[in-house]
Image (cartoon, rainbow, N blue to C red; front, top):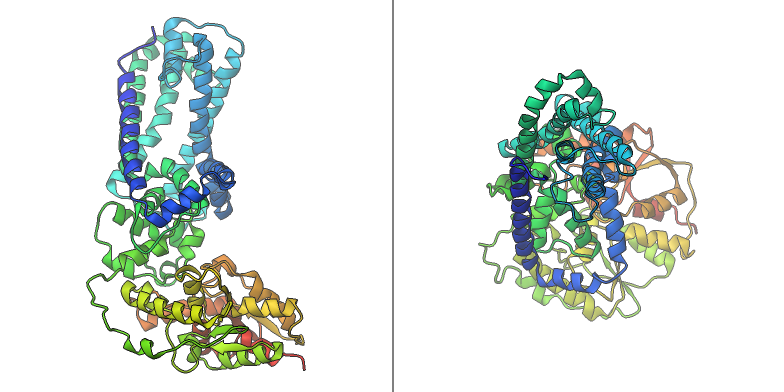
Length: 593
């Protein structure tokens, strides 16, 4: 006999889970926009599927990115994920061998020890090995659950200063999941007490129990085990644990080159549900570390969107510095989702920028286009330095925004003025395409990420000036003299975390000076505080973030602070008497004659 009423809650929970998942995923896939569908069709039969499969294993089970953040935290996540999967797979094999068929009842593996005891222990090859292996796997999962409980009590052991404050329903689902494995352990131990079919763990505990009492209470624990599974499985699709399945979908979509677009889409729904609310994004956020604001990070922002709460305030209170995206183990594009929620649809945009109609393209065939950007015009020494570098390289160029500047549109885009930004993007695109140039160089990381991500310029090479200067040096088109000068480099948010350009600026600096290493750099660099993404914080709060970034740089005892962003340079210049220079300025000063 391989049936008992206590299996019904589990079976109902499984059916409910897969029905709900099917409905949700079908709806979200149907909501993918044309651009996302096109990317899916183009790459579904490409080698990218293999890369996605490996990433799904690496992150969905082994949690490499979480291990990188903290070993103990990674161990906790991986023991639960791997252990639970192994329990399902190994118990299925064990049940099949016991029944002598590969079509054993679906619930057999979940409640195997009970049915084995009821039907008599049957010897099959490797029976003892399976029994002890299942105990070892159960012990591994129990260890992970114990660590998860300890994390709630003392998070610093897991490399986290701030713990996520979960919604009540998420807490309820969490406790239901935690209960599953101790209840299974107790149920199997009670059965082992009288049937003697346990392994090294459950049989040892079973031997401590009175067989008569254990036999009476085992049904209580088997029912409780089945009910805890039911509660968790039914609650999962509506809780933070939806990430267990959704993260795999997101990994595949991302590898197939799907990404967030201007408007909310089905892909956004996958991203919202792929967030496990681990809270790793909280500690690194400058608004938390420097201002003590720990309620606006993506862990809460994404949660509130998913639970249909008002996110107007939390959407605007963000530096858009990409630190949370860099820290996120799932790499959720939370900055883009935040920008979507800032969309100011109600504004009339007709005729807002009539002056751009009077700007005409320059015949730049054989030249490069140089776009300094608004902030570079406020720090004129940067475009002046680029002029010197162009001249030294013998490079003809068109200074596109020299006299009648047109903004790249990203500052408007970040604040939700999508239609106004598109007006500027359209005009700039026309000017660049009609110029005939094949290369565009900009000195502003904000402009750079805008040209790369928001413009459609498929036949134009786009470089930040740090990349371009690095290229000139490698091709010996310019020569520089190296000075005995210690410099430290500040990674601008949009250039570093935004576009992953870390190597080129450092190559350039090593050619002209002695580069010192800051404690927090590259992905961990601290924002200068004057990022254009946040219009909520005060000037005083901006200065606090800037000062934290300055302290990080000054501990190196470097004589010169170097950056590759006019905004960062302006921010630091007002905070110190030390020399603050842009990469272009340092190179221009050290051009070999």
